[in-house]
Image (cartoon, rainbow, N blue to C red; front, top):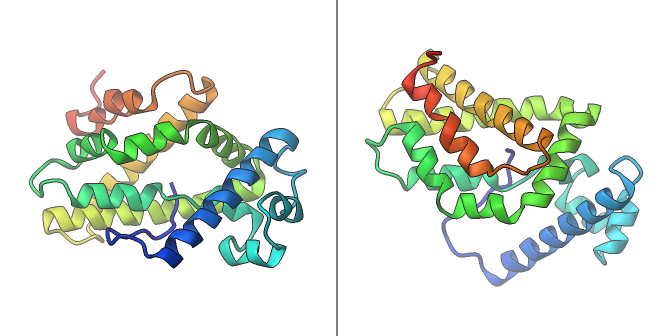
Length: 202
């Protein structure tokens, strides 16, 4: 999960138009990736399919890699967690968040998520970028845990908890992709995330 900033404030007309353009670029990019492969698809092809200029493409995505790297899941998760009761355990809060709009988003984006995750796991350049994005996601989760507990985000326990959560996310998505996306991703989260709060006893 990586970042494009979102806000709880309703978007204005200009922002909605920009979001529609961003969505169209991403949609056409993934259609071309599916048809021709990620490496064989060029920015010029994506721009032509989205009916924009290459310079407009780069205003939305600095590189072709960013079409794959960027998404709205982290901000959506952050918003959902901040809406949960402050005394709710973090794992329970995440599971409840996955039953709301975030879960609907993941379900709606199923085919795109399958393709982009396969690309993330197999393309060397994107794999290298994703390491940094994973660290950023860990910091985001650590900040939310800190907000909810009154502890510092640099606290080692907080950082370890955030790292464990992101590691489980990554492992479950990889398992889901390797199985062709046939399992229910939300159910995988519901089944396996509680291992973190119940303890790893086998």
